[in-house]
Figure 1 (tube, rainbow, N blue to C red):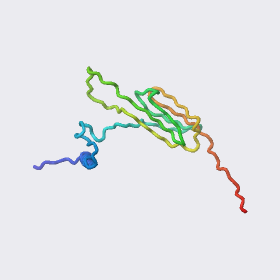
Figure 2 (figure 1 turned 135 degrees about the vertical axis):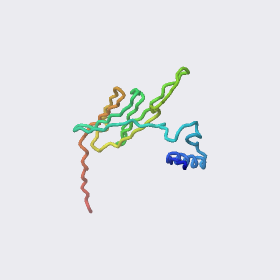
Figure 3 (figure 1 turned 30 degrees about the vertical axis):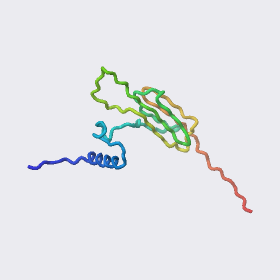
Figure 4 (figure 1 turned 90 degrees about the horizontal axis):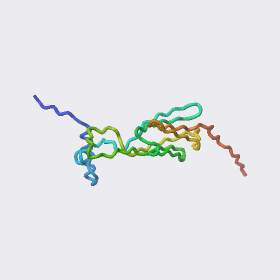
Length: 151
């Protein structure tokens, strides 16, 4: 009877990354760095729903456990940015964590706005861990024709 070894592509990928990191003097991944795995999620991105009505676009972003003070929304040059940070609760000496599945850390989401959005009229509402943004539609500016005279 022969021993069967299962192929694990993730382990091979981590080994490749570790060799690359050693070559360039970068920190190692996985077991070589305090047991953290390569695919741990330091950064995360909230899930969003984007809806369109006749009057506006509506973006709903899930931000459970966050306060409105932890989130910043900006619009600049046709790009809507949602950014913030979900902080992990401080551990006390009496607490014993058995499992941590929720993701903590900073996030950044960017959305390119269509031409028919009025950037000045973005409204934000934060309720029950959901950030709701309403972006009012406008008629897109029509190109202006300029008559050129030829001498």
